[in-house]
Image (cartoon, rainbow, N blue to C red; front, side, top):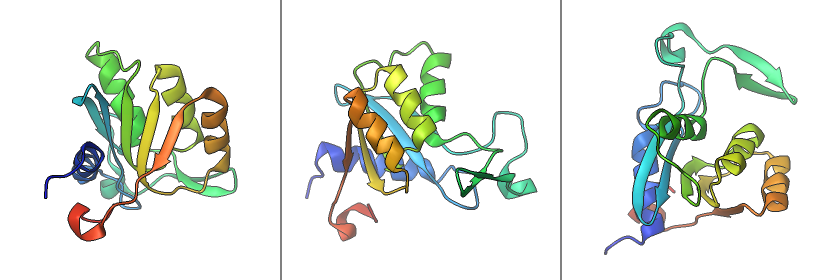
Length: 151
């Protein structure tokens, strides 16, 4: 059966996540406008720096949670790739394997992205509250696990 556009782009986000260099959690993001992929991103270290999978995570407690300070998030990398290549993401939709954190939500809002579709939750109610305040549509996608490979 042919996947819906949401399923299609979420599957691509899952594939992008396989490039992650984080041993704790692999996250992938795809930024789309008019059913065309603009950029992708996965979580990992900045270019030229050692990866967590090679040297270990740089863990700090942030807002009461463990957070790796070595890596950029998938959403951040997708937005950065757009900037590096001169691609506007204004009016686009972001598909992400996981709900964006607060910092990523703020970047998504300022980048002009209008909607976020994600597969798995992330315990950050403030990110959802801020997204709502800004008019950013944030939707958890629920699909048939067998057809999508785990969304």
